[in-house]
Every structure is written in structure tokens, then in C-alpha cells.
Image (cartoon, rainbow, N blue to C red; front, side, top):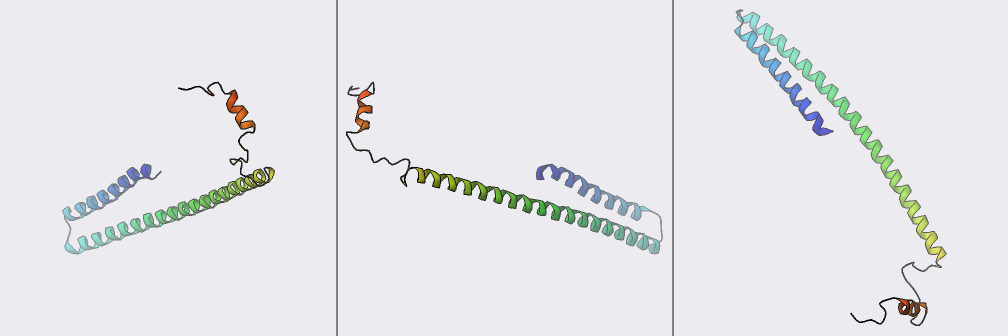
Length: 129
């Protein structure tokens, strides 16, 4: 999203700077007395400052809104993550409880149990490669 706003930002900055330079050039090359010229420059500068303040206020408002939305989304994501973690812990506890507190990966089988029978029935059992 930020990359899409950069070209627009550059465009408006260029427009603002170009407008200010064009106005300044128009004022300086106009045939007016010094007093009139200073008055016009003062008026144009105050217009540019007012426009800049408006742009700053608008940008500041938009930035605050974006920041608040990001904060809200982060809180929602944290809630979801906490909920998923809680569910995963509950399922893990249920699995542990159903196996009698043993880990599902650990086996207490001894040699000579069904493990040897399973090994013996394997097609490659006893063959040398």
C-alpha cells in the first residue's frame, strides 16, 4: 500500500513546488513597484503556508486513522492467536489425558511384543542388501 502512495505523494509535492516557483517567477517578472511586489509576495507566501498547513493537517489526520486501524487489527490478530493457542493446548491436554499421561510418540513396548511380529512380517525382513 505504501508503494502505491509514493508516486501520488511525489506528484503533489512537485505540483506544490512547481506552483510556488511559477507564482514567484510571475511576481518577480511583473512590472510593479517595490511596495506592490512585496505585498504580492507576502500574500502568495501566506497562501502557500496556508495550503501547506492544510495538507499537513489532512495528512496527520489520515496517518492517525491508519495507525488506529493498524492497532485495532493487531489486537484482533493477538486475540485470534491467543484463542488458537488455547485451543491447541486444550487438545494437547485431551490427547495426553486419553493416553494416560504418556506422550503419543513414546512407546513402552518391549522387544518380543507385537513389534517383532511386525518386523518379521515385513517383506525385507531378514534379507541382506
